[in-house]
Image (cartoon, rainbow, N blue to C red; front, side):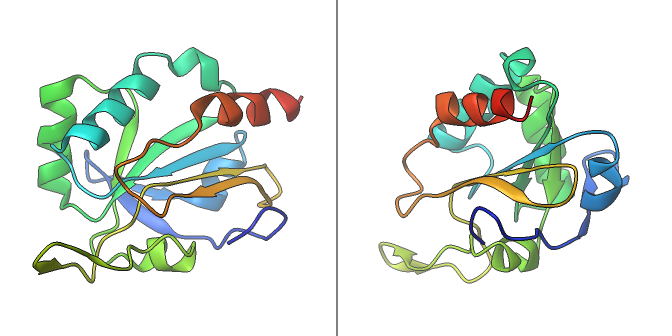
Length: 155
C-alpha cells in the first residue's frame, strides 16, 4: 500500500466488541491507522501512550491502533494504560496483509505468521492513502511529526 493507493475497506472489532468499518469511519473524516505488533510490549505501549496522550494533535483524523492481539488482550492493554483511542483486533492479520504491513521475519527463534509490523497509514475521506510508513524494524516508532503535518496538510 503506497501513497495515492485506494485503501481496502475492512471491518474489525474494537475492544467493546463493536464493528468498525474503515469506509464508514471515513464518512466522518480522515482516519489514521497505527499498526503495532503486540500489546504490553515496550515500544507498542510507548507509541499508543504518545498518540493517546496528544490526540488533539491528530485532529480531525480519527485514530485507531490495529494489532493481531485478541480483543480481550487489547481490552486489558487499553484499560491498564488508559488509552483514549480505539484498538482494533486484526487477529488473522488479514488487514495488515492487505496494507502490506504484515511482519516478515522472526524474533530470534520465534517465527510469526499472523502479526503486523509497525506501520502508519493516513487515509483521506475518499479512501486515498495520503501518508504511509511501514517500518522494517518494528522496534522503531513512526514519524509522528510527519503524520501530524500530513493531517494538517489535508486542510
